[in-house]
Length: 399
Image 1 (tube, one colour):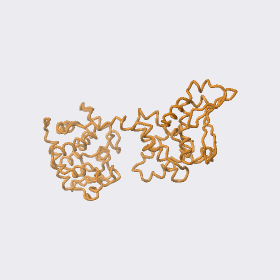
Image 2 (cartoon, helix red, strand yellow):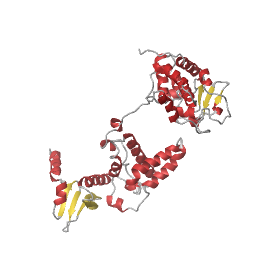
Image 3 (cartoon, helix red, strand yellow):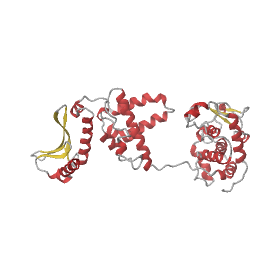
Image 4 (cartoon, helix red, strand yellow):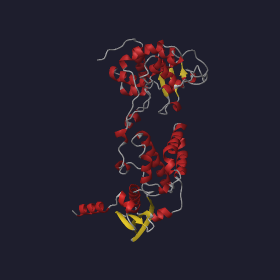
């Protein structure tokens, strides 16, 4: 009963936007330490009153109307959290400027760069932070960043770009964690999700529209493969080869003759060109070998661009083959899903053999620890069955 009465009283006494604009000289409380101070001159400013080490203190948090009532309440909430964490907001404010958020982010990127798989990661980090974070937080001392600041960055993009916004939040959190690790900041991370921002923002998965790679049904794969073979040009050959091997298009487009062992019928993709960062041996059935053309020097591309000699085909070039076939509804990457569905639904090949054929890492860590081989002999049989199915020229009716 007492708690209800206190809550009612705080609500009753809280300021309204109109009261903030029209209140006469004096101090007007909004509750929980937030005060609007109105001078005789009419100048209005916000104060936050709190107790620290047994002493009553006040700190200014901006002038009205530059700082509106809603923003003043958010700033007061941030200051209450600082007090609850055992820190004095005045001391935090008066502390000499420390490491700027932008500088902390640059340092973190340099520390992480050697562990990233390619240079794109650093570029993506830098681009994301420059676009969404630096305009508000770039020059802010990293030890002064509050939950209010983080929300100001995230709220404009959270409903419309949930995937991007989620990455932005994670990167802000990582920068602040880094700053805490090197002693440039103390206290809780205002960008953490669990138990914190999760209470203020909807889950990204609840608003994210997941888009899967459009894939042909496995029943139409033979007819589609025959149509690709009938198309002209090196891009069509590369596309057919991609379908036969169930490889990623980027691996096919970057394939060099030095990776091909014609005697053994193997394509050995080096670790640096594989998503899982492990060398991947792909058995080449006779149909795949026939698509390679005449052997050239080891460093030469197998599927070299005819428009830009010495350069690989672009992903758009492969997609263009499908568009010319009036199958622009499909994606090249979707061929891998077609292969996975066919193998899982129509064959008795073990799951781990199928996953190895796709160069997937097994999700079960215990299972992966024992799966040290690459099951090449079994995969050769699987890819032979796949080639036989693709070249059967039959369109299987739906069951």
